[in-house]
Image (cartoon, rainbow, N blue to C red; front, side, top):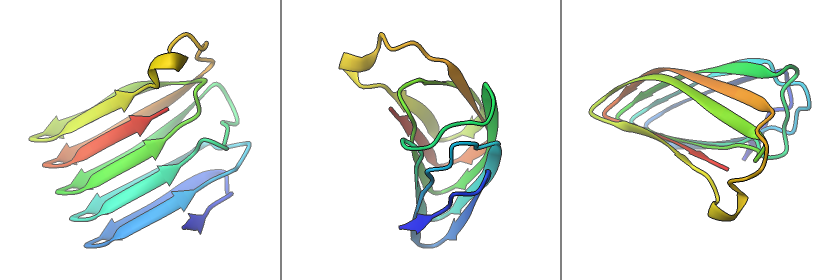
Length: 117
């Protein structure tokens, strides 16, 4: 697993699998792309610098899985063609106040993006 503790996330994968973990307390955004591979992004121990941040995604015939903290909500602006984006909250944690907003945007073509809390 690759550790990234910068303020900006950056990762790409082509025809393989990659796992990235961040514990940064001041995330400001980033770019993640996957082409015919899979990307797992672990942000459970990270936090945003402000109240929101934008994560640019590009997934083509691939999967991106993003593990986010329980106090984040998601604003999904992805453009999906023959694929899907889904958020999977833990059923016992649905009443936790969401104080930060993760905005995800970008193309998801014949691919999947899953956000897990």
